[in-house]
Length: 443
Ligand SMILES: [Zn+2]
Image (tube, rainbow, N blue to C red; front, side):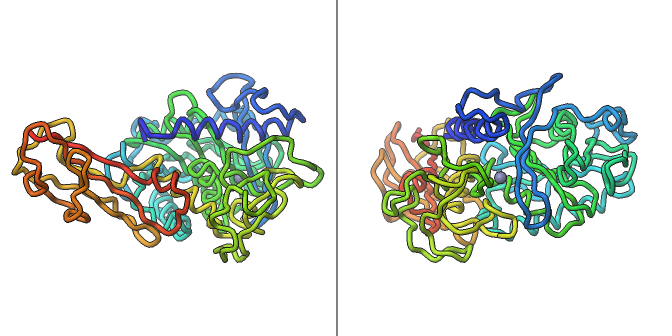
């Protein structure tokens, strides 16, 4: 996603979310005053992570040390070094600069178990990409598997806290003495992620049937990495994939958590940067006023439900429940879907061409454009312009010549624009964010 249009804005917003979580833990309420965790390795550094105490259970945040415990970290994998790890493209729908690159690696899989890892990764993908809007927008992703070979099968802390296994990424349950919190060595994740052509988001699948996982958010990628989020989950627990689906809600959609903690009381901030949290209870002025009254995929009618972003009062969410509130729900609400679609297009462009935009094209030269293979909710529409004037008869064409559009003079500009007409987007600003253009000049 290098050079994305609004990634900077989004990650600044995400800093707020992470600092909020950190502030909760220290009792401070001054957003921006707490250090931003997870910006690089080093003694004493910590990551803020989110975990879930059981299938459909209560989500929690905590800080974990960047360093794994010495008893686990001293093991070194006996498999190939990360630099020699095999990479398998699961799907490659476009150039890495125009796609959201998801990297999946396993931990606790021996050399003889790499086929198991591939099967487990595929099953996780099948589950996550059955959820909307991932399902409709899978075509905006490149997906890469990286084989991390472990000396031993399974991960540390499974089934009990004292169990130590020698694995490639040092994954361990009972992180910070929390049974369901599945931590790992992010510097090892980075070493393997670097094997993929690009990595925006990483899933780590631990070879285990024990329920657990963690979501690491990186407002700026850790040292040497390009990814912004790592979600850990176990392979053989049927509910663990929901951890990955939820965590991508944060890292792609910049969505806030829609749950609250008992005893947290009133919302201490004047506003929220997240699309799914509003401090305004009046129905007509909530951020999601365009969706009010709609029946929602999560089962409720969209309104303003009090409680969210960890606080109990003075803050509102769009629906009674959702995947951002509890993993007992397997759907984003309409507001979350719209934010996710905006996030997809922040990383990815639906329009590409094999004709470089920096070169001049002859009037009779064909210009072909390609649309990302999105489906379902999505609807891509191509429009063409000459010197900024729309050529209506060419709408929908994926191959034109400048001459056919009436552009025969040297220096005239031919532009192709694609916009997603999906009904899952109602905010004109989000609609604009789905759009991208390519322009050529006539030779
Ligand atoms: Zn969360």
